[in-house]
Length: 487
Image: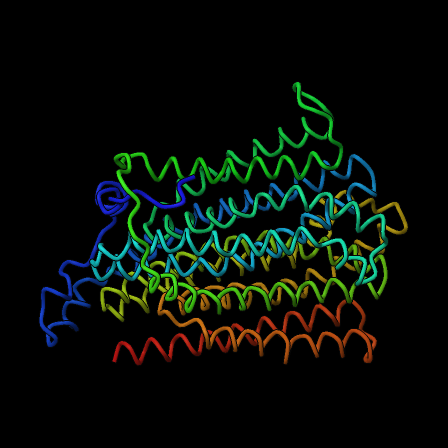
């Protein structure tokens, strides 16, 4: 991995990454009075925008699903080693990837600013943004690794059994060395998405899914000439897969680039701009992740059956959300590109295209959950003739009905957040998300689940209403803000 990109990345960008269509004329080639007309000329027809958004979103959704598949592979293979291995490995992986996901939100600002620079045809701004992104990722990885290295005392403090805390710490202390690769990979993906090169992101993720499965099996059981490491083989496989993904993505980005001659000086004002734009994104991701973590903890208090049913339903919801997330990332890029080109109406059209794709898919999935809930539950190896499993299946059916209700809202809030990022609006969305999830959704989840006695369904209705509130607030903000820009 190169800590800094090619000193002449503008050549790479011209040769490889700037093949997408641009507005017919640059706003810098016109005077002020002509900009509304140029915005109109540069705005693609809605069906064209729909195709462009789909072209971006589909590979991103598949890449996200492949990433989830890696976690599912880890879980299945750890389960074969027994309950203790599954508990330690599952908790260790959840801790690492949750913390890493929040930290990665900080560098998603790279894609926002690159999309703006492309739209404005200010190509000279792209190389410093990429360099600044890698520096910011490196600076973020260091404290992340330090926190993870000292995770055992924290686990003991919150009441985890000492043996479990020790086993989780061993797992995490191997996996934490993937932190730099995870952060650099986030920069690469954000950049490639902004450049419209999402097929590379998808291809690397799919091959990583296969490699991770093979390495998991080999390292856990000592196959293929690899050492037998037990449950620690899972984190070692993830470590290798993460570095492999980063290296493969870097190689793909360099295919048409000449060999570097020198390291370009870093522009610290670019890093500061990335931080100012990125930290609210990390906060937004954190408050949403913590909401669902709190939901899982409440389910644990309610008992084993609600927790098991929650695990099944949340996995189903997470799978469908990956498609909406792909549409949200596409909205980020397309809205940012058109905003950079000062084509505000085209930016609104891009957001609408993403909503049609993402929310349309989520509506179809909601219909599937309403019509086939039992069949979905049986995919998780639950046995109807087992009394305990039968109780879980019955509760899964109820939770999937609630999940069907919030599918559309979940997709709408993600896409609105992505579109707002395309407008460089990140701070107010963070506040709106925090309010929706923690001042509105969480209190309702607790009140319905416990004082009012609704149990698991009450907790899920609270989560659903939190997502619905976020969807309404974020969409209202986007359409009002974009209307002002268009005016």
